[in-house]
Image (cartoon, rainbow, N blue to C red; front, top):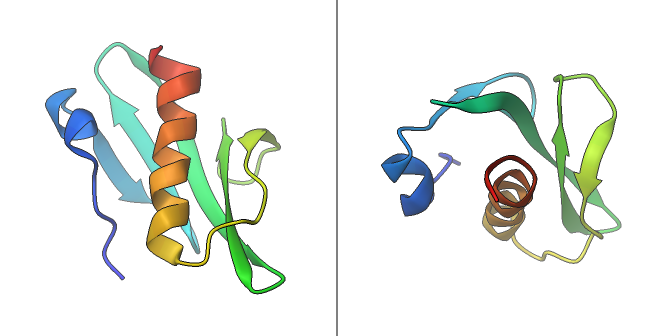
Length: 85
């Protein structure tokens, strides 16, 4: 599955680079780098945000997403809430 970048992330000139299994490094001008990742748990997906690819989660959702793509969207929202607003 290809990662779909949200339009707001593209407008901020953000870049996403693979950083492991279900993990991406996000970078954008004037914003600290961060890592988003998703995990499957009990048949559902959860999203997380971290400062390092193998570091502890800064923010995490509950495993409530039925689709992988929905979890990625939630991960981007965690990034936006923590790093941009």
